[in-house]
Image (cartoon, rainbow, N blue to C red; front, side, top):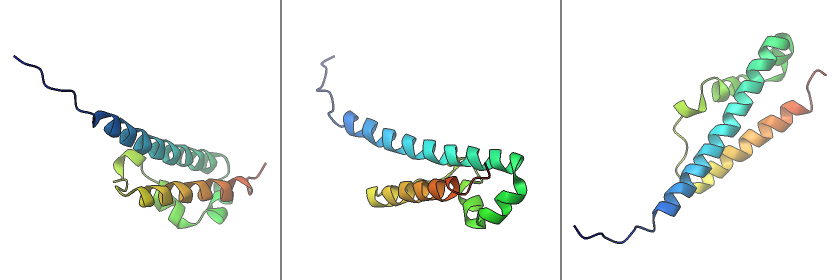
Length: 93
């Protein structure tokens, strides 16, 4: 059986998987941080974190349909970063 040429598209597939994996990692990190805060300082968290954050990070990121467009993925990543920084400067330490 003759072998065909290897497809060059595999590099693009791996790069796309890496981007989605990083988005899931960021989301899971924020979800874990919110869950930890809910155990340690539940009253503070109720006051500081809007309900939108609980909707966004309440479920595991693997259960979400991540955006296909690069601009939408970038917006999601920037939103997660903004969420993290807005919580970090208000932590009850």
